[in-house]
Image (cartoon, rainbow, N blue to C red):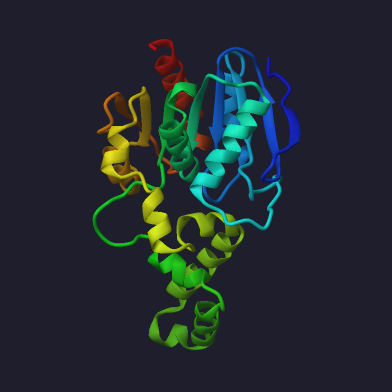
Length: 268
């Protein structure tokens, strides 16, 4: 039997937070990815809520949560999460984070290690890697004033002649997707580089994550391989591969993910 999910809101010092909640037992707190919201967890929550207390907030500035005029940072999201969990009297939790939510979850565990019993990470953002800036193109596409948008639209009538049309249309679609989540853009690449670097999960910070960590990766997900392998160097981290035919693991492989999470918690 599927349990009814409760939708709630709470006023915190940083702004109002919306969340979904269902089930009883050990508390699992789900932190969503960069370009989505707490609804992305529904297929997984449906499978886990018979055994666990599942809590899935919209991060501050996303979806149904308030978007106050603040300077957004990972540290601000960590502070908001801390106040939120304290208000709900959830003082011992498992954090499950995807993408941006994984960065926030790991940063929370670094600051409040005594409150986090374990981390489950899927394609976490914010891992410091050597090499190029993978967000450079996205930064250019979303920069204000929107020079990239003007230039791409200016080139579009000539694009077919030069074979650029498909590439330009992909870039315009990407910009549209990115602009739907301005706070994610701010956190990931539209801040001062020095501020972002200070919050990245560096090798030294990863080595301080001395708690059980489960990293889940689609077998064919080459994009997530490098950050996942970096996190896997943490003292108690384990990387598990999941067979997948679709990059959206949460939608297509929720059964396998739920099984791995149960096994992870039961062994602790």
